[in-house]
Image (cartoon, rainbow, N blue to C red):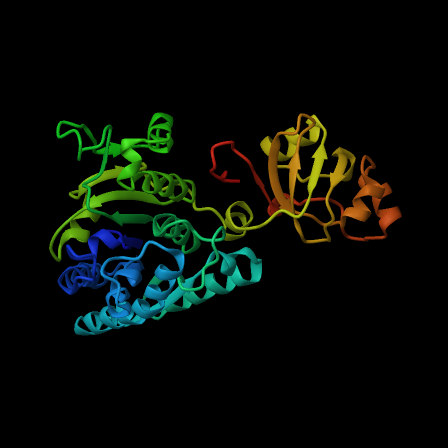
Amino acid sequence: MKKKRIVVKIGSSSLTNVNGGLCLEKLQEHVEALARLKEAGHEVILVSSGAVAAGFTDLGYAMRPVSIVGKQAAASVGQGQLLQAYSEEFKKHRVVSAQLLLTRQNLLAKDLYQNAEATLSELLKRKVLPIINENDSVSVEGLTFGDNDMLSALVSGLVQAQLLVILTDINGIYRENPRTNPNAERYDFLSEIPDELIEATSSEGSELGTGGMKSKVEAAQTALALGAQVFIGTGAGSEKLLKILEGDGDGTYIGDDPQATVKNSKQWLALHSIPLGKIKVDNGAALAISEQGRSLLPVGVIDIAGNFTANDVVEVIDPAGQIVGRGQVNYSSEELLEIKGLCSQEANVITKTGKRQVVIHRNQWFSHTGKGTITHE
């Protein structure tokens, strides 16, 4: 079997006991299965929930806290306990593990995003198994990943993984909620995420959404767009991950043969960067940059909104106000106001920029698809 780079996401429901606390027996089983993947020669990255579950009882909570401050306090206590448990169990299998805590803020700036990528690359090069979790104890509401499902999808793109495995307590994606309809039909394989499934899990009051499947479907859609295949399901025993890899998993497989991976610079632009302004372009420029793989030239610029400097990220819109995409701009908003509508040669005379010939280079651009995914350019 060809060696793969695999991201495995383990949710709280797969790590906790009936009282909501961390279950060491379940953790041990997961570690054995992950170690078997390593022994088979695969590169493995773990995205693990469980910090709140590990820590809330030591704080005197009778049950898992529901307030933000309670969750953050429990996570700050439980994160060390969770990683200690993982580290001790992995050592039994002669696997070195490492902790990496991320927040959305860590990935907003391009240099921080690149640092996270470099750290993970070095750990994998050294045969270490990274364990990633959102840094819940300091995350700012409104600037979180939302859940570890989406974090695992973003990590799969960051490390250019071929497969994302999301382990949960439901064995796959069903057409209806299997907890309320025992005869619900399961999707054993999906080449892509169909629109009706997205609508079903996203609709208000959806039964499918109540079981946490909404976040998993959204994560799968993102992972597919980044070039990784996805498995969502369950399993038992030390061979469960190997069985999933062999196509014998108890769940839903999503995606045909892996697509071309998306460059990390494109991923950062599409999924993490914050646009600081808008550039309106004519229809010809919109077509050229979105469908023809061309760079944006000053002549195609109609108007500018916002204050930005060179190398900032901006959104590009067409004359109707529809988003075309976003990219890193080579001119400040002041410069661009002076040269909009001019040919590149005339623009360079005015701005004295020398080598800069384009507003946004195609290598610093991604096109908006309208479905929350990114394009392979």
